[in-house]
Length: 262
Ligand SMILES: [Zn+2]
Image (cartoon, rainbow, N blue to C red; front, top):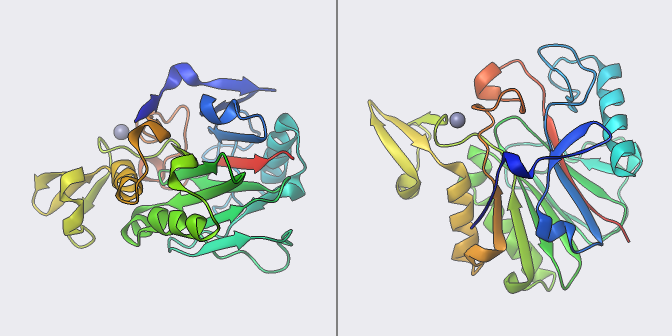
């Protein structure tokens, strides 16, 4: 596994972000795991909140989205956002999408269409991107506890294989998310299969490493360590950089996006 940390932080037009240098090198795809910095929203959404559904002022969210899309060279209407459900629905985008009037109720999407910038909104959950270097196909996943329990990452990879991808051609990146240092869950939602990725605290509490569970799902279907990258920064520990639902409850959502240029 390849670890990316704060030394890998970059900035474009005042928007800080993280990226996987191996994906950047490909040339035909752009992506970024953005932070909470660089926007106009006021506390507790300060400042680059991209979500309309947490109580922030709509006008500020529009401005934030506009700042992001202009910094990275695309249009706000080319940003495809999901109504994330904490489930395992996967959108297969084979035709250009019209997001209105129905929200896209999914937690992952796969496409090979250029200029569709797939966006995942998070504040502790893991944004995961998969790129097939040979088929020129991209996948964006929102993996929270529930999606992880449903095996969303493994299911997305299965869908890619149905589309003709081989696991050997993939570059996979996990963005910033809540780490095992901060993610306590109780036995009501704990799964036995998560034991190897957890520390038992006693009293029915566990510290869970959600990223490692998703990485294990990938390895189960044949992905190798060297193909996997992780921005290894805990969103709750680094609240200067990231929104954290566990850390703040009333807070914003940061955007991670990936898109095919041509
Ligand atoms: Zn932490």
